[in-house]
Amino acid sequence: PVGARSSDARCCTPSGAHRAAMSVLLRLRRLDAALANPTELRRCLRLHDLLFFGVASVVGAGIFVTVGVAGKEAGPGLIVAFFLAGVCCTPTALCYAELATRYPFAGSIYSFVSRCLGDYFAFIIGLSLIMDGMVSGAAVAKACAAYFAQVLVSAGIPVPAVLINLQLNAVIGISLSAPVVLGGMGYTAYRGVKTMSRFNNIVTIANILIIVVVIIAGFSLVQAKNYDPLLPTGVAGVGRASALTFFAMLGFDSATSLAEETVNPERVMPRAILWTVAITTVMYMCISMVFCGLVPHTQIDDAAPLAHAFRVRGAPILATVIA
Image 1 (cartoon, rainbow, N blue to C red):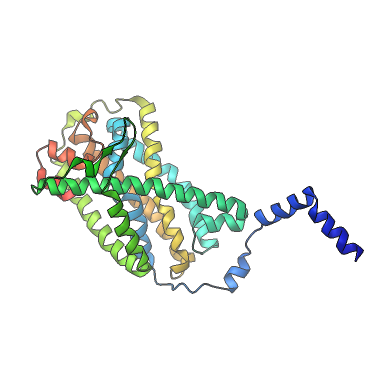
Image 2: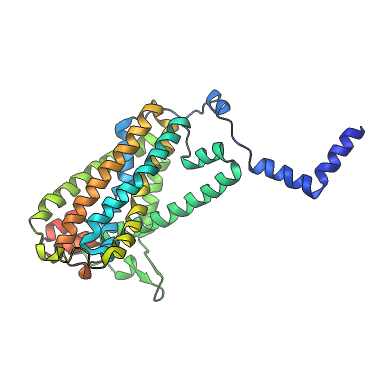
């Protein structure tokens, strides 16, 4: 028919093809269709599971690394930097809580964007999440390998430096043992969300207990002179440290990726996200208060800052516990 031929002709024109492509890229995934066709994922996670998962994502191994990197920038001002990072994270946490309540699906921000802005922008967000996971995962895996090496050294077992940090040139260095850490975590996730949740809960509880012990014992080793001056690098240093710590505290968004496996996500998700931000901010401020009082900011070790600080203050047992 003439009408069909004219329609096909319009689709074959550059402008018609452009419109067709944009309609596909910017199409929105319908919420009612997703709610009418639920997935087969089993809802087995509750508030404590999400809370442990969120806290682990924020303070996991990163708390033993971030304090060193940011501490070099701000010195004792690191305490202020963590407070500012927590305040800045709060509006973001409120946005995540709202979206997780409205769109209780797996995928976190990818699912939010695909339903609000379309597949094209969701694709870009997905790539950003992959890059974020690669960078942060590599940093944490390298730190875990460095801490484990310190445990072996404390036990009298020599560890070749090449396994921990193989310096390719003046800028680039790699850890040959970090892939082992990533492989172990990947296998745990492969076993299923409930197995991962149990493992994460155990590790997080142990981690929190270690942090509490470090804070209590660390206060007895603090030297007041290390807090003077409070802002050795000025306000600019605190600003740079806040940017670094803000990146570390954004792990709370990972809990939203479990919305489709959570019991009553509309009620549980907002509580888990906001409690995670509050708890982790207080923990970071307490650990940074102890850390900054142990060693001057000019003597901070990048690879294992807390363990190194306790070893310098003559507490090798605590250093081994941290590692």
